[in-house]
Length: 190
Image 1 (cartoon, rainbow, N blue to C red):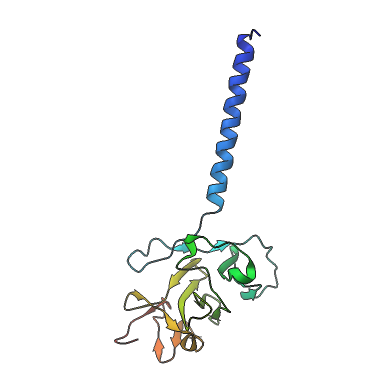
Image 2 (image 1 turned 30 degrees about the horizontal axis):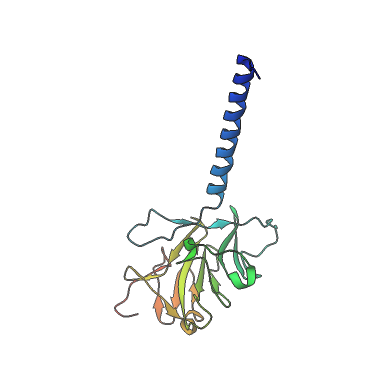
């Protein structure tokens, strides 16, 4: 079969179009599943963005809710998933959630009276007596690990249950955080 130049040119144009569309689909799939990274004290510029959830935002939603294994924050930017229980929510767990984003059992949380900060503590296994504490800053839409003297810490679940906000500061038993950054504690012994 003999092809004309126009037929060959049309086939090349179709092949390029298919390639471009395939690359576009591959790129958008890769970017929509991006997972947040955790903020380290050494690198404050790499702040974690909370994950937007596909659930519709209702006007009468409380600022923080825990439904079907998912801890949600209702912010001006929309609803954010702060942490989820994969056993209850059936959401997949990737390696990106190794340090933050996944909990087992019920997650412990407390909200500041002005709704600008949320304390939450994630148990990394059902048998664990410890949990990893974080503070979600609603205004910056970022999740910070609780640190004592610049080091991220874990705490007993019984201690995390006593955490509460007193104005802009977070109080955990007899320890009080910085008012400007409620995820930072400076003490001699924790």
